[in-house]
Image 1 (cartoon, rainbow, N blue to C red):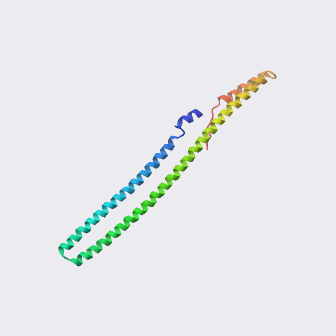
Image 2: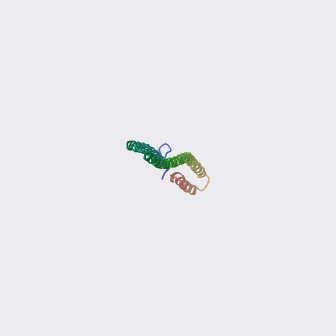
Image 3: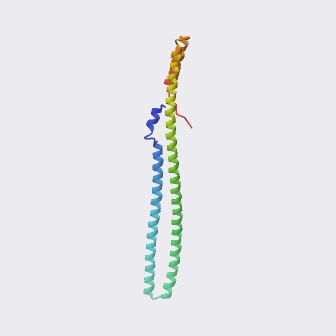
Length: 178
């Protein structure tokens, strides 16, 4: 693959896979935020629903004029509600910790991606410099051979100049593999 073809694969130094990685990370963060929002919404609805249940039980107890029975029922409901809400609070705390960890990983990934982009810029610059150097070396060597043609064995020098010219100027640049 020629350098010109490699450069066409990227757009302003950003490879398509880098964009896909960024999109996937953004989608993952959005899904996590949506999940937490849904849990909060369910928690609020559950809390409202439980409060409505408590009111209904209290009304029945007043209607039946059974104060002691109403106190017992109220206490049991309060304990059950406290247990439910404690469970919901624990779940929300666990979700908050997972979200913070995901945000930290996302930040680390962004930093790693930035370092990779800087490395790619450096590699592109080095390839350009190497190509330019090889071109100048080829021209200088060919010029030396052409100069020597007049003072020595012209046939051998002409053949060497043709081979060196063909090798140095017509061979494709192969990208480095890691």
